[in-house]
Image 1 (cartoon, rainbow, N blue to C red):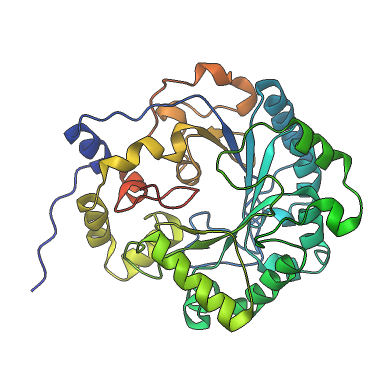
Image 2: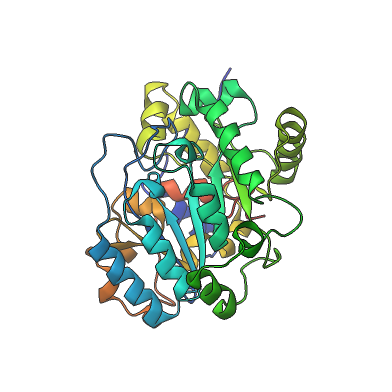
Amino acid sequence: MSQPLRKIPVNPFAARLGQHDLTLTRAPLQALQVNVGKLCNQACHHCHVDAGPKRTEIMTWETMARILDWSMRHHIREADITGGAPEINPHFRRCVDGFLAQGSQVTARCNLTVLLEPGQEDLATWYATRGVRLVCSLPCYTRENVEAQRGKGVFDKSIEALKRLNAVGYGRETATGAHQITGRTSAASRASLSHRGPRLDPIAEDRLVLDLVYNPGGAFLPGPQAKLEADYRERLRTDHGIEFTHLRTLTNLPINRFAHWLEREGKYDAYLQLLEERFNPETVPGLMCRQLLSVDWRGRVYDCDFNQMLELPLAGRAPRYLWDIEAQKLAGEPIATGSHCLGCTAGHGSSCGGALV
């Protein structure tokens, strides 16, 4: 017989922090996560952005230019560009080159199938020549599980995209720098390589990083990241000859499409209770919101991408634009939280970089 559900506090995350005498405040800013729009060639069931082919929210070049100017003035070390499918934004490539010219390390969040879209035939090589780090969604190594989350035909397209990325050097153990692929390096890439600050992890400077992302296919937490990475590596290598750098395990947060699915299935309260019961205080110091600012397609800022989707502004204040903020004044400020934050602190934890402990 199942256990009855407990009454959950209005903000159970804040309650859990209090029980462990923890506070959640900002550290010095290291990264901008820029959402360049909600337009996407897919409409995945777990997508917290509610992205899809019919979305019209898209960042203009004028907004990008203001973000780049702010980033240069504040010496931002890392730019994490996401969407939707960010590559569909007509100004995406210009934006990437702008960050690279400043010496920022650039990560792009890619859904893989965009590489097969008309007009994107050169995308793998374009990424490689610039040394852009790729974080690519592949919620499982089996066709059945991938297509249950992402739609029919997506698995085969994802495998083809990964093969294209491997062919230009992504995910390989040995380096294949831009000059080895094209015989020359772009001015933006040269600026990036010569002025880039220290990396946020120990991966070699000349390696083309291809990380994959796992999302659970239901109302449960990811298993141990190292074990899942080993399983992915064996199956993708054996079945398809595919290599990748690391696997990042992400917990599905109970917002937007996934929350709607939980509600339809009658599992929302039980899932929130699971997240609360599995709260792990050791994850709190590594939460992405402490060192990152999330910027939406209009230029408004949030503590994280999830708060952005809930339109929960910085520290619960009125919405602010990036260019109205001074980075050095953010350190020590409280972070706006809600019940969804339990998803980042349950079990092994979950952040943009994967598991936290």
